[in-house]
Length: 146
Image (cartoon, rainbow, N blue to C red; front, side, top):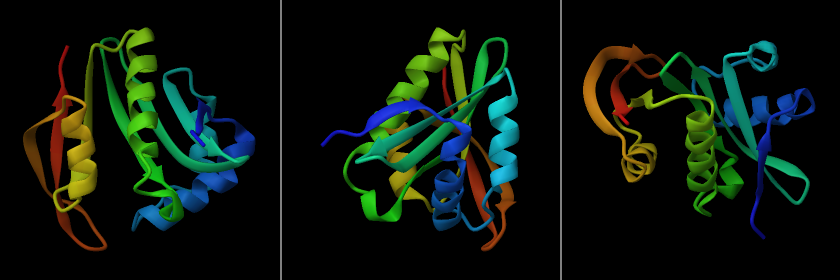
């Protein structure tokens, strides 16, 4: 069954925070997600399957560009194409809100994510040395322009 991709709601936040905690070494808190949902310049989506939130992703949208945040899928649902569907919808909705260019940072070792981003037209344009901790690692700065 295909997941439903929809706007994140405050009711989704506990499940989103659990996915975040299972996916990142320095996860955002429920409070941080709730604060992002209140902002006019953000767009957060969730993937829902069988009534359960199984993925999430977000954008911070500026005048002509947007920064991608928090792309993650529940560990039990990975490998099913959910991230790809969700990410494509995020970019589509970001363009509808005026973003022409998109940027993100990703751990240099996160090959699955890098592959997803490259498949969606992103290219590496720089490196932020020692950007991540737990463990310490460089971040690749990726852009999709136009």
